[in-house]
Length: 114
Image 1 (cartoon, rainbow, N blue to C red):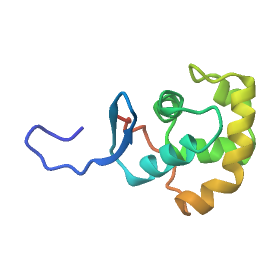
Image 2 (cartoon, helix red, strand yellow):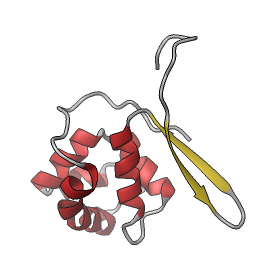
Image 3 (cartoon, rainbow, N blue to C red):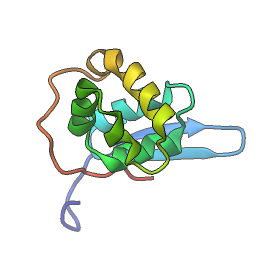
Image 4 (tube, rainbow, N blue to C red):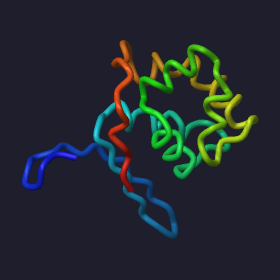
């Protein structure tokens, strides 16, 4: 996080449900776009999508999908073997189309906020 009093840009995603309004904030637009792509995958909700983004950066996830490394995804809390395989299958085609290329080099996680 920047120093206190500094100006920042926060990219947000609002989920409106009958029982709640959920606002999610991201430091980078690529994180928000990936969050949205993850929500489109069957069986992946906001909590799982946040776990993925908290467990690795966008660039790291891109590398995991390219390498088809399901074992790396299962190290993230809440991601089992079946979910990892579904993520790899669904994201393989969507990463470049939905988020855009090229991806940045692997960088430390900026952290998604809720």
